[in-house]
Image 1: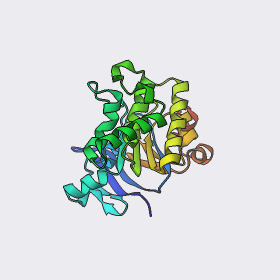
Image 2: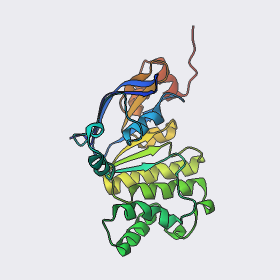
Image 3: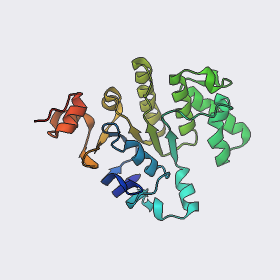
Image 4: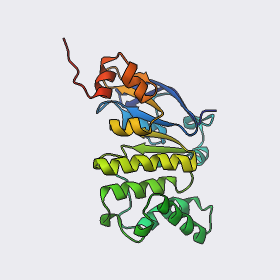
Length: 250
């Protein structure tokens, strides 16, 4: 059974259509890249999938349950199985690294305070940041903040993980390190992952599947493994993106 199923989703801001006719299934343990040029609606789709933007049409099912028809209590239960890494990492500047990772565990309240701290330190160890537990976000580099944000996103053991432009602003070495970390997290947790990105090296390195959103037609124009889309797609927009080519017009 798919952990996430999206059926005929339409996304709008007021009367402005962002994307339409979005449908896909995400199986457990799969990494799917949401691709497309700037302004095509990748982050808007992410907002809808994590419950921040109600679609104007269509359905989002989490393990068979319709999120937008669920009660608020049911939505809270569904969100408890999601983890999110925002583009900026979104760490609380007034909290230490450890306190940032503890926050979702404290809100969940499933463990004792001692066990929460032990688990938070363990997760920080997974991302190589245990020694920075007492530091504040202002003491960290961009790549370090992303790793702490990832640790916070996985702290509660989510079955579904959303990563919004995780490599944005990182140098190539830090970006590759983060890619390897994402693969390691998938191996450790078995979580399904949706990654919003336009970074081709990351897409080819970690994504099993891909969904390509088009800004002109305002709907998906391709779906499949990224390397397969690169090698076989005949759509000029997809080919230009996957090969970093300029689109030429007659």
